[in-house]
Image 1 (cartoon, rainbow over the protein chains, first blue to last red):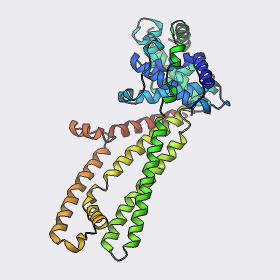
Image 2 (cartoon, helix red, strand yellow; image 1 turned 90 degrees about the vertical axis):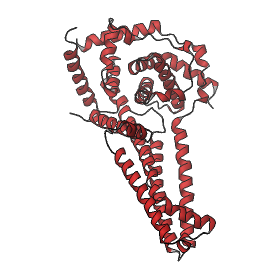
Image 3 (cartoon, chains in turn yellow, blue; image 1 turned 180 degrees about the horizontal axis):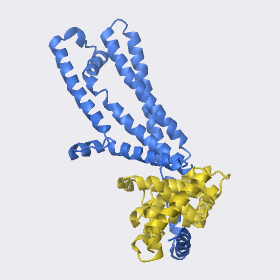
Length: 165
Length: 223
């Protein structure tokens, strides 16, 4: 059982980095109910790994790794998983459903992100969040040159697919 | 559209999140984090329990074989059963090894960790498939069980007809298991009722896991 000061420290950390969690969850879940479950699952995994945080990595790197790993696994798991998690109070999270907003920039942005596969989607989120190639490679577990190659490929894809905009 | 335009949109989205994200800290405190169960830890406990049972079974079979020197048909049956137990132990140990590797939770780098998770899924399904294999030999195991628990010697007391019946049942069960195993190794199963039946045996999970493993390997490749 973890102590209250540790819990407070953890809650402060979540407060400071909540945008990372929501960006990742928004990118992997279209359905708002699933997204709430995913946010909750990420927070629980962060809490369970909190005592083992390795300070050789930046806090944001650690959070990104956990959030992305959980989101990818969640994305790939059948919906039955939903029934096995504890439910979160609806008032805790309120996120606008960006994917329905097809006319706006964020709708376009999510349209592009959603068509990428799970791993390239993670790469894209990190790139758009202005992470360095080194940090992206640390989070994804691939080399920096591989990161650069993949980003170039995504650039080409983007040009081709959205040439009319 | 260029990537920098997408970046501008992302920054706008970032600002929007700042304005619209409501995280009520007081309510957040009410989350029963301490009660959250680690699925990986639960799986590890199940696997350790399985290993203990397999170890006891293996030990008992070895003890029985040593004690029953001279009863060759029973020793041979026990040896076959021991073989299944030992392979089951190896599969369980492999799973424990992978679970130990990912025990640090989800804080590992994405590609290697996802690979381990998919490999674990495949092993779990292989383990289920393995458990089907001794089914054709169940008449023999019944004979062994009768000798161990009730001291009833089927080999001494039953005539040829009985053994032909056992053989027939064994052949039928073997045909069923072989068909099941063949279906589980297919990438696509056409009859929908077979597909529905085998989905519960992990067929769809193993296919999805293999496909994702290939995707991860391609993602890791530098080209």
